[in-house]
Length: 310
Image 1 (spheres, rainbow, N blue to C red):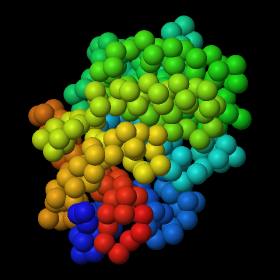
Image 2 (cartoon, helix red, strand yellow; image 1 turned 135 degrees about the horizontal axis):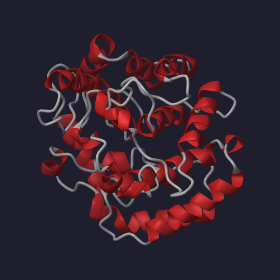
Image 3 (spheres, rainbow, N blue to C red; image 1 turned 120 degrees about the vertical axis):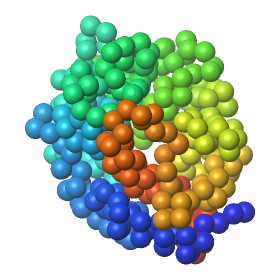
């Protein structure tokens, strides 16, 4: 079994500390140095706007300072990571923002606003045709948002949460096995929600388990391209899909150990393909910071870092 050497771990840590975002430094400290969750919340609050939503480049592919549902869901993943609760103001404001963005006529959350076009962003976030590109938002981001409505149920209307969960499960059940990978990832975030009632969890888990191999990257060559990384679908040994994707996860772990950059970081498998080249240089560095922490977390979870237990 391949292990990330202690020296390679130190290089990764040094990269984040010396070249990474403050957000990622604090997450690294939280996960590896017993850093306090309050320090993560304090830094994350710098990305939260007056309307309660998140922006300001927290999601490096969207450099818009204003809020979007996309970036707010990324913030909520971090809040879940550090076990923030409904009593935390940062969570309350985030849920309030999501409720203002809900399109009740279509029962979805539009993923980004038109304002996205006014600032540097990845080409797939061009506002035109976003509804068509993202399946009219019926899974992405709706499935993930519904997970946060369950997790922070004190802040969400119970009737709406139940109604939308049923709608999401019905929609996912009607999709082909070869699901869009981003729809699938949003469903993974939903099924991993601690407070999701068991009947819905069981139904979704069965659907995702059956479909996972149609979606996931199955070879090192696929991991060199934008793809559904196994570790995005099963980031811990206790993840719903960990057993189903055991061989793919092992392949992904080996790949990451073999493809660490000389500076200690890991790079995204995508670019902005010539759009906003100067802004992409900054965004790429931000992604390297974010992904390095993500990779280190997964390697430790699976016992793949020399001298560190999972």
